Length: 363
Ligand SMILES: *[C@@H]1O[C@H](CO)[C@@H](O)[C@H](O)[C@H]1NC(C)=O
Ligand SMILES: *[C@@H]1O[C@H](CO)[C@@H](O)[C@H](O)[C@H]1NC(C)=O
Image (cartoon, rainbow, N blue to C red; front, top):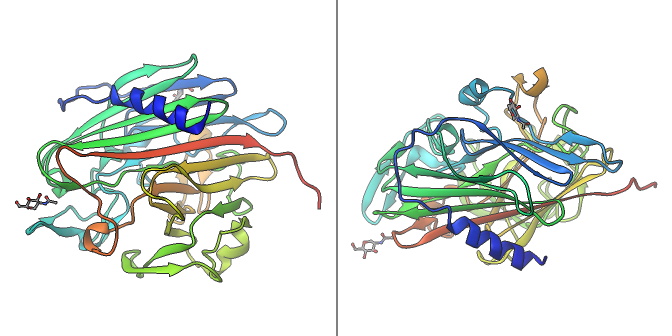
């Protein structure tokens, strides 16, 4: 199946996911998707990915995302592990913005700034399971959430649908959609899985080879708030225009990578290649395509003594996040593309992960 046709059938499928907002007394549970060698475990707490099992170059399976064994740990998590973050992912400087003459004060949860939607963002709420098909040709799960007017300070009701689908041969598609019901509002959703292609319990990701198709970054200040400048990566430690080993460049960045790349050649509609990650020991390769304008590359700087699945303790650089999204803090930077979604318009964000393996190469 071509990329376009798989995307189209998924869009149709995801369209069925829309519901009018309703209060949700949904039970929290775990849900499986399985196709061939790939299996996923998800939870409707935060519409999160709990595990992703993939074969290595010898067919041996490993779980390649960080996560927890119990719901309680998801509820007390502070790392956004595996979750959908929003209403506005990333940071909003001063936890405030002006829209059309109205000033909106948001809930600050990182100093005076807002991170990933506030104290109780979309990663910390119970989503409704709209549909779930565990296996077959196109295993999928569709989560929905109705965010109310004023939630964490944001204007208007917003209905969000997030769909995860296993398609083709070893592909995971993620579709995020949102409809504003009554007021224009900023929307920027992101999927916050920490990937470790060597296995979630294999140590750090510093030996991973990464290729990011972004020639520029949105520069940030010391609080990681965008300055509004768009800077070229060439000749800096941010340059992943060719595949590089993360650890070979990270030395120059005391706290690792936590930066938004401006993806090259993305029009906002077409799926473009955003990043490739290759873990040489297992041979596992992840290729990520998206229609989003940006990619926040985060190497787990703030992971410290996080007790994860099977009792394994995640430390700094224990996983990497590939958070496709709009540019951070767009609401406060008129030179960044707008993230405002007005009633009658639908926000659409697609991610396509293609998993494969490569045999070892000998130098
Ligand atoms: C999904 O993950 C939860 C929490 O780690 C676990 O209790 C459950 O057994 C898993 N289910 C499957 C099918 O792997
Ligand atoms: C701003 O307000 C004007 C007048 O009320 C309205 O026509 C316009 O659609 C609004 N723009 C946004 C982005 O809401």
